[in-house]
Image 1 (cartoon, rainbow, N blue to C red):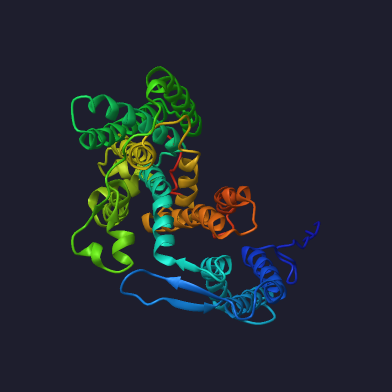
Image 2 (image 1 turned 90 degrees about the vertical axis):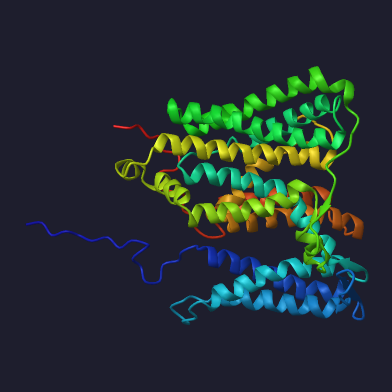
Length: 429
């Protein structure tokens, strides 16, 4: 009888090299840390301080710029070196993960303090800018989450946002001829939500009823939205291209008076404030209601859900339309709440970045918002760096959200597992 010959594999080799996320981040932080330790003493004056201001009621904080930068550089270096130590050499348990997370969190304050060296940095304004710029990304992430939790891939969020931005703005102009302009803007937001829902209904019709490949269906929606909104702008809006009013900011009584927190979370324009409520509502519905339980069941195992009496097709349709309505609201943020006009492709790909934020957040509302805030902070840096005169090309800062998107989609921030039936058409037997 011939004897089987076993061939050792790389996975079985006790000392085989394996490229992991921990190793990659360890190399990155170690290099950045060493570079900071070398460059900061030469580029930052020893006596320079950065002032952190928060607004009324909170004293300013003076931070020694050079000392803080060197301390963070040391943390980066140590975290990187610790991450590079093989587990078989030293058993560190969760120490690596904790140190890398600490280093990641420190990126934000050290960036602001080094960029604003010798000047004052208004922390409250930076937070407000980050949350505001993250608003459409958060809404795009929620739009994708409602769809994908029920098993329907929604790369059409970008097209739904663009459609909502266009038709919401056009309708506000029409209604403004017979009603006060702020009232017309409110009706425009409602039309934007409906327009996003209708595009989602088309996506559901193609992908759920006709079982079209959901990526193809989403791509069709996006292409249709670009052509349709461009046509509507050319035919209706070119004669009225000047910017108009936007939604009026509001302040929630009592809560808006809280220092820092009140300005960031309880003062702002309606869609901005509504985004926080939608994140909370989505979390409660998905994890604490019967509807959420059924939605997740349909997204994980539609056949088992069907045997329990759940109408899989109806659940998917309703969730897809809800996601589209949220995407339409995101579109209204662009044209009605922010700039007061509509431009071709004004959503700028933020619908796709919203889906990346959803993946970053592992298909959870809170995690999706955290991912959106990361992208929002990257966008807010562009304005801050220009005002501080930081000698970094603005094009580099503007590409940061896209770079972060690629990092997220490559899985370098951790493995994200989608619902098992996500993207799988269901046919009732």
